[in-house]
Amino acid sequence: MEYEAQFFDLAIATGVSCYYDLAYWETVIAAVKKVLKPDGIFVFDVVDPDAALTENWSILETFMGTEIILEALSDWTALIKKWVAKL
Image: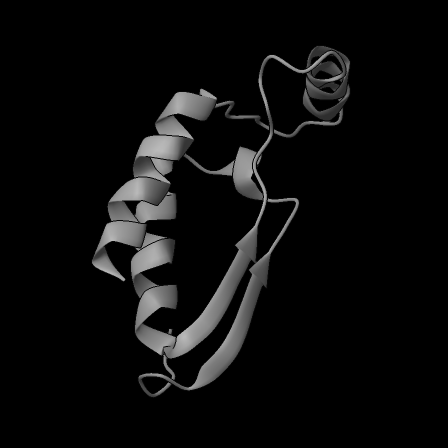
C-alpha cells in the first residue's frame, strides 16, 4: 500500500478471507500494520470451514466460478497470534 506509515485509524477487510491463501494474508497484515496508527484497529473476518453452512456456500461460490480457499481456524489463529505479538 502506498500510504505513509501510521496513516489510518481503521482498516476493514470483510468477506474476502476465503479468496486468498494464508501467505497472501500474511502480506496483507504486514502492510496494514505499517499504515495503521499505534492504536489503530484492523477488522477482518474468516470463514469457519467446519460451520454448517460453509459447504453449501462453497459449492455455490464454486458453481459461480470462484475459487474458495478454506483454511483451518487453527491456522488463522496461529497467523493472528504471530502478528498480534509483533504489534
